[in-house]
Image (cartoon, rainbow, N blue to C red; front, side, top):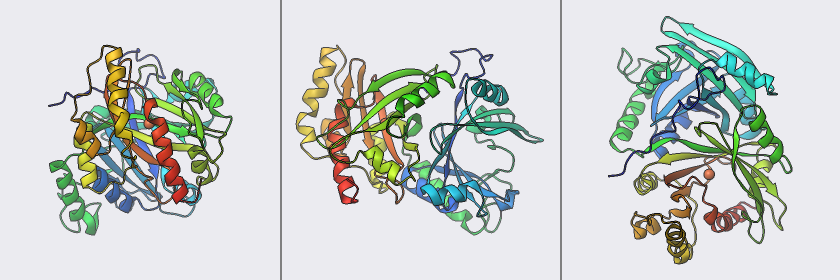
Length: 419
Ligand code: FE2
């Protein structure tokens, strides 16, 4: 039985600090067809399709699906008109992450503080209110097409209530538990209601064990990494947590550089990648080429407390993971257990053969070890992917795997004609 790693504490800074982040409120994706994307993330990754906001709930411009798992909330958004920003951005970038939203005590104050720190506004504070409570949101621009929204909540829309199944915000309806109980032809799902109910039930019985967003990575243009590092320091008052240069992250052919920014309470870490010159094309450059040369979120790392169970469950659902050559496992135990021993840390307790059979990657540092695995791109363009990560003391990002991983990625790039 594994112990649950708690999400980082929200209460390490006083509530009077406007940029004190309480939680990752949600991650919003702009997608071509939110109803269909909801089924993809539910089927492949075990999310609950929990709430919806669409024409039937008075949302005339866009459809939004709230998907949940552990403390992860995804909002999948599709424009219902050709001029909705989601429709326009999907044409430019394909499906991907638009917004990494943070819960704060006062969204307006957080926004004002960020703007006075030098942020460019994405949109001004706006409040949605009804008899249950209110939700205030305000957004600032970050790298490329991405934004950070500050969210503050009152009444029934308080995040603790949302986590217990309360409504996400005005104009959202529960897919299950609504007065009609998901009966045919009733409620937001109309004719697909029973399909949602059955996938939700299946996912409750067969959990994938994903708990929260551990980190998310932004890909920025050549020469812009330090600009965005300073942005996170100045605007959001983050600190640099770690950095990797092209000597750490390179093969004979391609390279990148990365600096990891962390919020004051370590609630969220945001590594910023930029391509580095190599003989062939960096994976970051491939991303930019297929993302209209615009920075954006490269991957979301989702945390589990049991990597083997999660990866086995995701593989059984057909999730497509990157494959490393078998030779990776010839040296991994010597490397990882050698590092752990040198720092007096316990050896990897998970079954080594199962790790190999499931194709999981392992790395260690002075604080412990981590288990990780990366999906292939989640859409047709080689842009957004997920990482499934389990930490056993290590707070790093798998530096010891970079070389093997990048060689595997180069094979993928070559398959796509993009190396
Ligand atoms: Fe990562």
